[in-house]
Length: 317
Ligand SMILES: *Cc1c(COP(=O)(O)O)cnc(C)c1O
Image 1 (spheres, rainbow, N blue to C red):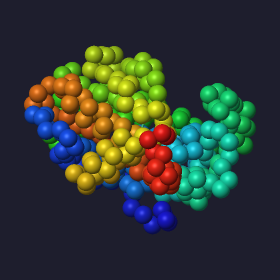
Image 2: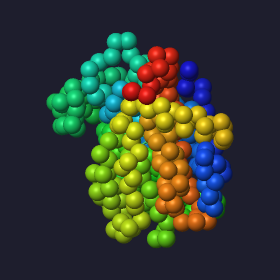
Image 3: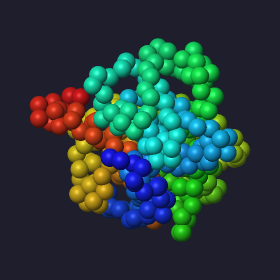
């Protein structure tokens, strides 16, 4: 893929579509916001979070972006693509041991010109203060440091725009959560009668509530009651795959012709259906689910899933 010849991200691609949930027919109207269509590589919430950071890179006359992420990170992938598209050097600090050969995410990042460095899982939590980062910054003062997941003040400003739509009369905004930046941005954009429901992809995601509130409070001090964090739809954790989830994603795709990813959007949508079935949403309410993108990760995940299906051990993953 040659990204210098690709089109630029286009938010007007993010249409809102009415969807059906497999196995549920209630009085609520359910919609999806197609942020996954903004750009093939800088997709979904990663573009939303990057947009005002790129403006900041330009304002500060920086020439490169250094950022952090896991080996399957959609943010690493998107940053590499953005660097190539907009002409910035990019450096990715990757959690864990180096990959040889590179997985599809890192291979794409590398071939887009991203320099890759690895920090052990032990060192990674202190990544911002690691001597390696200091050295890279000393060597190149033109580097703009973007936190993990691209989540910072500017990211929230972009994510808040998810709530701006021609007919902004939704009762619920549902989004998958990793760092919480997207949910926090949406929270700053909603009105007092609207609810934001965050679905952490990680196990034990309850800690995200405080993180999301803290992030959002940089902009605004109200709306704590507008946030709900649903921790029970992690399916075992970040990169775990369960057959129940895969089957749901397949049924959803069949019904709506919209692909989901098993790390984020699949879990969120499964959670929305489960909440629907449990009667957690007000009757006749309007629910907007955010398709935050992440389909590139399916490339790496696909081979793992296919192997497991072939060996009929999917149920035990
Ligand atoms: C990164 C990502 C998320 C998590 O977003 P946060 O702002 O970090 O909470 C959700 N969905 C997809 C598809 C992502 O790639």
